[in-house]
Length: 124
Length: 124
DNA sequence: CGGTATCCACTGAGATACTG
DNA sequence: CAGTATCTCAGTGGATACCG
Image 1: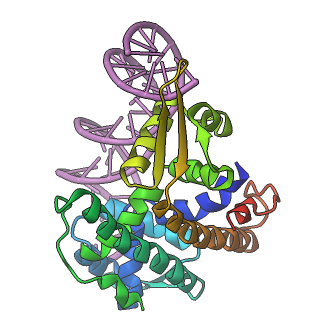
Image 2: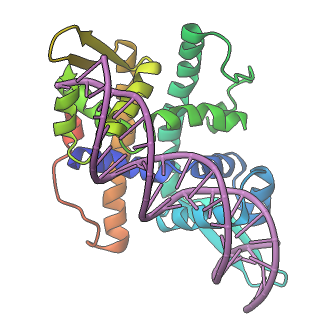
């Protein structure tokens, strides 16, 4: 159980399909508004976006800056502490890339491999 | 979408609450029988264990060895290719450990931190 | 022993509508 | 614009029973 805990901690943060998408966007683009994130991640609903951002904020990975304007404006960015996620994301991504190739070798072309360059590299 | 794909690949494998537990056990103990895994992971159901193992096998991460005996005997182990997961697990675990401390600093002691040593280190 | 099949309860997440 | 509230439904996973 204790083994799982530590690993699970990372998992809980990264998991949830959307967190990674959000993190990736913020990492690449810097500061983004709520609506910009919505546009950048077409299939996410307001509800999910708000929920995931709230969790990331709680974990001190994402910073939320509210401007007292009309109409409202809220900007999100990765905290300094949040930058520590980069190597984790990168490691997972690297493995993922290699694994897709491995799966192809084993099972052929069926995987919806769109032959795109590894844009995750942008994370640097 | 393409960004997500690569990252998501890793996520899909690791995700699912149980995969990590299984992997960790096999990594630490080497070969294990179905029933041993059940005992080692008390809260997992047969159904889930079987399902997760099947997925890991499909991904060439876990090897399944069937002995034609009565009563049946099946042994699971990490494939050579599967060993490549170790650095990924380790990176995530390391971050997880650090993050638990960070959360404590921010929010205090409430987290069910059992003050255990990082057993994940066994993965080495 | 090592599963599979079936049924069921619960949760995650989409759609929609409303608010400050 | 940036959310919150509700309602709903599909999929995940638990419990149980059965099979080779």
